[in-house]
Image 1: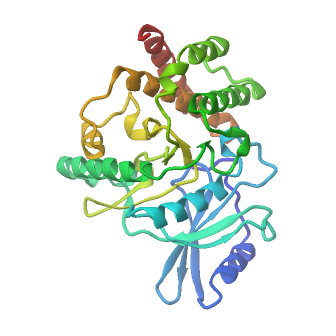
Image 2: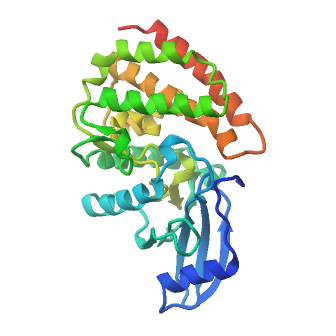
Length: 321
């Protein structure tokens, strides 16, 4: 999808990036990959038959939402950490240049996975294969969440880090509200009332005592499959240290029993279900703003997110513990 955050580069700049990263290889061709929504990405093919994926961060002049600041650094660091600490299949980081000398933005190259995204392969996947894929994603998500840390929050943003999860999450939610206010985006829920209810639910968040790595973006577009099997997980840029219930597989409006089975969850408690509603709202508030910050051609994501947000907030207000 074309949008403002995709930092397109000239052919000569791209060639120089490739030369810096792979001086021993000869470039055959590059092609832009259009499936993603945030960073621009290119498939790089070499004359020796090998391939790599290049990702470039947005231009520094582009206004980003608070949670998107410095996320390429977070992505590279989290990918390297997961590769070191787990058996989760993901692309190997091949080269990272945060200097901003070539294009005023960081970029990195990573290994090209076999297969294609589940989002693009859905029509070709059998019901049994889909069940197996979600089971696998559940088990891999559990392994990711097994990586622990000393603080909660965004890996590359100290202002959103801390030792108490409720306080960190509250600051993250306030930042989303502030982002909306800056662009006069109507989030369809009363912000002050939302924050007051979050404070009332402080005890729920005190259940979360260990900061765990959360991918937070494992939707179908970021799960690669080949012949009905998962070959790897991509787009680690939105990783954070938090509550595993933030993972996409736990969203109340799209939970898969196969994901939960793979994760090892037999039944969610009422306290967990309520925290899930909070994480639903947090994600939907972000989705409702992306069409403005990225200048999408339509507001269809806004319409979808705000409608569902209203439903989830009403559900949260009804389910007081």
